[in-house]
Length: 125
Image 1: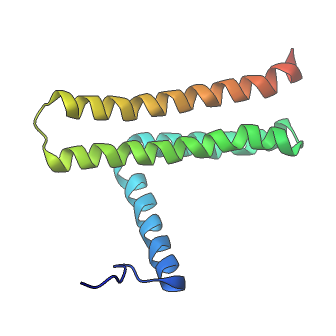
Image 2 (image 1 turned 90 degrees about the horizontal axis):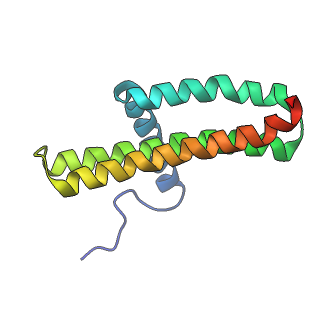
C-alpha cells in the first residue's frame, strides 16, 4: 500500500492545493448566489472600512469578519453539496445539516453587525 499523498508533497502539493482553492472560489462565484451577494458586500464594505478608520486594530475588527463570512459561506455550500450528493430525498438529518450550515452563516452576519456597530457607534454618536 502506497503512503504517497494523491496531491503530492512539498511545493507541488501547495500548487495543487492552491488550484483546488481557486476552483472552489470559481465554483462558488458561478453557482452560489449567496456567495456572490456576500462577496459584493465585502467589496463595498472593505473600502468603507478604510474610509472609517486608519487604526490597524479597528481595520482588523471590520475586515476579518467580512472575510470569515466568505469562509463560512463556502463551508455551508460544501455541506449542502455533500448532503445533495448523498441524496436529494427529504430527510430530517439532511435538513438538520443544511440548517446548521445556514445558522453558521447567520451567526457570522451577527458578528459582522456587532463589530461594525462597535467600531462605528463611537465615531458617529
